[in-house]
Amino acid sequence: MKERKRLAVLGGMGPLATAVFYNRLVEHAKLRARSDQDHPDVLIWSDCAMPDRSEVIISGESQALLARCQEDFRLFEEADCDYICFPCNTMHYFISDLTKLTTIPILNMIDLCLAKLRRAHPGLKRIQIFATDGTRSAHLYERYATAYDFDVIDVSDQDQEIIMDAIYDLKRTGQIDFPEISQLIFKAISTGIECVILACTELSCMTINPKVAPYVCDAMDALIEECLARVMGG
Image 1 (cartoon, one colour):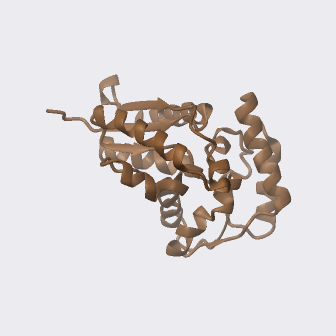
Image 2 (cartoon, one colour):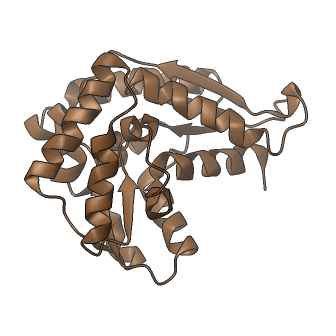
């Protein structure tokens, strides 16, 4: 009989973000683990052929993406995994359909991020979301924000273009130093934004100026905390 919980990670969206996710998960687990055997059992499937999520949302053609996910979920089911997560915010657009394709519970990074932010800052109100075009156009965070009493202030089209350029530059080059992202965070704070959410796991890979770090909430970290709580307890 299996005694340990197993975490399934559907990655490859993108590959560097998946690697950063696992590295952070190990670093967080080290706070509880005293040996290799204390670390969680994790199955990472980096499905780099997954269609671009923003393009799928904009086109409305999701059949190929969902079919691919269903095939990946079978792998997780055969491996007797207990939870599924995907370190990709935009992928959560499809979460209601994805939950129908597997019996394994899927952890919702967006809801976890907003819940964590509300617990940490009970009086915080005005937030801004740095994300892909797909996440932004689908209003993914807005769908959950009302339940946590947040006001989501949209980024300008010009700033969104800067964010997207940085995201795809990182995917293409592996570069992680994008000072323009920190500059946009400075700009947001100066206009009364109380917190900027890094709502794309490529943004989670980037170097952020320490001066703006207190005003940033990284969705990836919220997902990692929940993953460890589920498979390690506590």
